[in-house]
Image 1 (cartoon, rainbow, N blue to C red):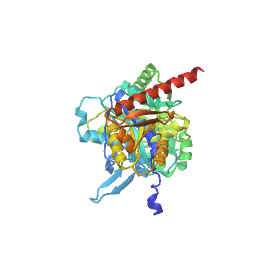
Image 2: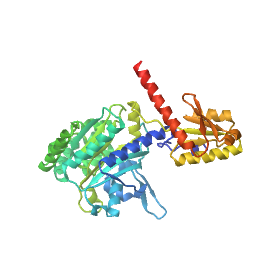
Image 3: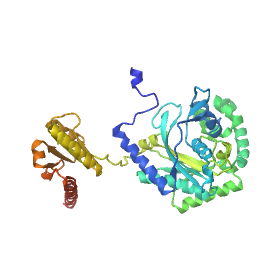
Length: 439
């Protein structure tokens, strides 16, 4: 029973006290997407395993160590999605979306799954906000995508993020770089971990992303990819920087960024914070001009990024960023007796139809218990109704903040009278606040 009632390791429940933070971030994500012209896409929780082996790269830690893969009843190899980009590409190819006007700009808010050691900001089930753009080879697209992430962080009220930028070139200029890397790491072959020894032949760039302290130390003096860029990639990278400069977006060129997935080409970037310890990268992305073709589509330039929502919440809490307060009950109807309960039910229904957050008793409490409950849920106003109030067709409306009471009709004019009194109370609160400020 104890096992059944605990969440699986590496997962978490989002409780009502926390869900408002998630909703705020999701609202800001959708606002950002709308402002930059991105439309939402949703895709399945699981895909055919081959999609990630081909798309993400079979030399990556994600594919080699972290995927949740199983065989279904039909004998097919299925994987819970470890990231959103490959699924987005599969979606657009499956549904012919590249025949629409380009660039095609899509975003997603989705859950992902990776078998990793659970730690702060890194869970086995985690959530991402991602933006993906298809059909533009121009460096302005890179800069605009980075600008959308920067805008998103501003909307959330996050400060102190550092944008780090690099280019890992195209397949052609990376050939020379791979040769230089291979030569460098072969001289230190005996010190590399077993995984990186395997990477040496297939993809030596993956060694740069190894989490082993020994491999990381060796990689510090490895050749830098930025020194091996061809003329076209070098020009592209310089133009990206030119556009970022024009928009006033500060950045640092970090030649050590390679990202952890094989599909990246040319521009790669990260937004990094020093406020949440070792897991400081809150956004990572870049170009993946060959991925669509790798997964069976026509050659299509593309780029995107993903932001981990759990890590984002940690960062916002560390910076004491302001989350909006949850909406409180605007009016609680407290009935006394069965007849009054029917009346209260009718009243809250009418109030909700007009958009008010209204509540009434659901568990048969006495009037004292109802008043305590109204206080607990932060009700702004309370109306107590019993047989006398129903007969007189009026009752007392109590402002729970000021304690003031006033008569209000229980007839057809109730909603209008309540709205006027609520508005009047709000104005009085503002005036009182202004008076306190001027004292």
